[in-house]
Image (cartoon, rainbow, N blue to C red; front, side, top):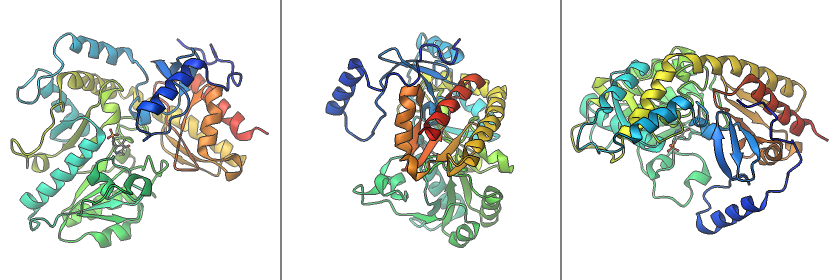
Length: 418
Ligand SMILES: *Cc1c(COP(=O)(O)O)cnc(C)c1O
């Protein structure tokens, strides 16, 4: 479909057009300022490319924080959604519907697990994981009522609800939103000794991202995930892997835990599970763990709805081919080789990541990562900073090698100009 440079004249249109300015001004007036978007107003998307309201095209190197692993408007996902739109979209869980059982069965199979509890957003799935672990702690492990403790890592990002931000270590995410939910202990990410020391008789779970996305694509030291698995198994504690961003192909495997041959007790999934079409999230675990729920104890009006399940089923069918994981591994190797050469040339201070996922630390003399993202924008590349100095790259797994190279050329221009 797309050739890399068609429709783009790199570097020639730095000023946003009138339509862009009007829409941004209206958004500034009528929407809460809980985001600081780049000054681009997207109107269409296909594959790795989006088109703005001025008709200018960009490669999407963020891919909705990995919610768009299969790119924009993947024909298989759009077809599945359209087919379901013509049948039934919502029943509530008050009734069964004919997409639900298959979706849960196939998701459990992909995960090598036994049961699924579907929700909508990632934060809801993390909340569900927290509630599940606590209930399992009281009902199965025998922790005294009200004492359940969950160990988490510093720098974590698990979502934005009041309970989840209660155990965030990011002041921006947390300040002014208290009082905070108790029952969590924070230990340094990557530090096995600290984690082992924090486990006590009331500990029901360790909740971790196998690679910390929002923290800047931080890959833990080799052996860390395997060590967490060993400690949690020995102490009768659930290992909950939040694979909302790292899972479903991004790192070159279905799950990031696979890189250390680790199987957690529970996966928390979201983002790409909805194919970039609808929000779909889930907790996936064993019968011993998810079997603790009784009717009325947890739920969601939209969780596991027919449209979500139909799109989710297509996502699962696509993942079963292994094609996207393979692309992420192969293109990821290429991406990290290219970034390695920028690092060697001194254009970056650090590069981290796995598969088609990278966190790039920008040298201070180049400004902030935001400055770099703003310089990439008129050149036709969409990327996003995280914290001050890290640029995150997570292109759709469907991106062509040519489009990836074209984007990396634009990045090289920005990082080596002047
Ligand atoms: C995005 C994300 C979440 C939250 O998902 P939402 O759908 O935004 O609520 C939770 N955990 C991780 C690791 C994420 O990347």
